Amino acid sequence: GENVEQHPSTLSVQEGDSAVIKCTYSDSASNYFPWYKQELGKGPQLIIDIRSNVGEKKDQRIAVTLNKTAKHFSLHITETQPEDSAVYFCAASKGTGGFKTIFGAGTRLFVKA
Amino acid sequence: DTAVSQTPKYLVTQMGNDKSIKCEQNLGHDTMYWYKQDSKKFLKIMFSYNNKELIINETVPNRFSPKSPDKAHLNLHINSLELGDSAVYFCASSQDLGAGELFFGEGSRLTVL
Image (cartoon, rainbow over all chains, first blue to last red; front, side, top):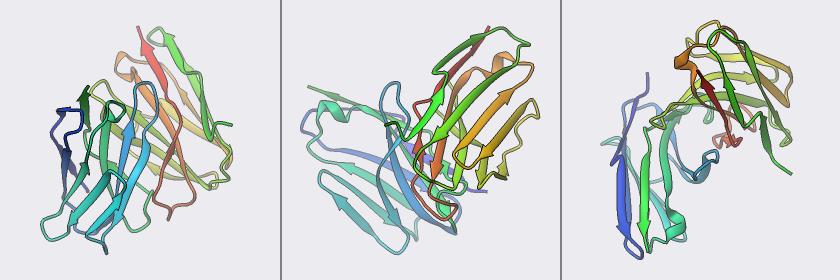
């Protein structure tokens, strides 16, 4: 079955710097790659997603890139702010999207003011 | 109005007891899920229901019994609780099996003593 690996497990950046989180997936049939942000005491919330027919997607300070050949995808956050501090999860699924989404282990991002 | 709500938020109980967690979504979604998040933040799917029908049972012990009385509700009953059941349990929903985005509740933290 699908396996999603996520690195790093912890990331600390200075406010205003960029943060990059990387994921790899094992199942070449996966075609949907969402990223979720989980704040303390809350459930994960979708922040951006990308489908396999697209190489890059951007939404304000957040961008995601996908390399299907290498089975890599990455989250890029520019101009980080303290409120970006949270746990970020990458995920992958195939065929029917939300059905059996497999999550990475999470990255705890600290943004220091 | 909370989209996916689950109760209780906190549950502390003794080993061997039976407990239930309730979940309701007011988004009109067809598909609901239970995820387990362990102490290392790893998110793992347990069950998925589509229009009250069980779709996924990820080799969860049969001490865990989900019930979906209608497509807006998915409850989780756990018998004979064990120490290893301590975790945060998240309910989630998606528009249907083909929809990518998962909408999570705020979680129910279960502590088994």
